[in-house]
Image 1 (cartoon, helix red, strand yellow):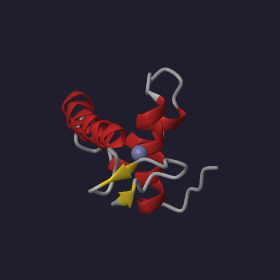
Image 2 (cartoon, helix red, strand yellow):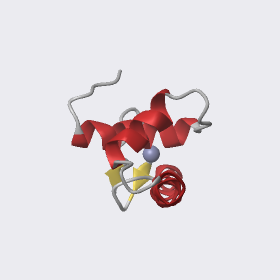
Image 3 (cartoon, protein in one colour):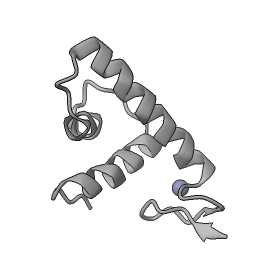
Image 4 (cartoon, protein in one colour):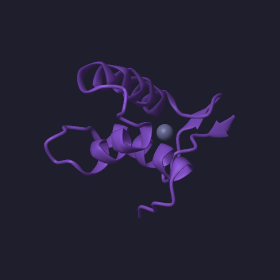
Length: 81
Ligand SMILES: [Zn+2]
């Protein structure tokens, strides 16, 4: 058993994320494709994640925010507490 890689998530998992965060991760990925279809392919993964986290007009659940921050910290120098 591992622990979910999301910070402050203590759930056990066989994989990288626990089932809750895994579901959110998949939703974020499919959401990115939808956004690209809607907004155009110059939308980058990084900008997409930033909008999920910081744009109040975009309704993002707490679990999805956790995952978005995790992914964003991998691809940028941004740090979130
Ligand atoms: Zn988790």
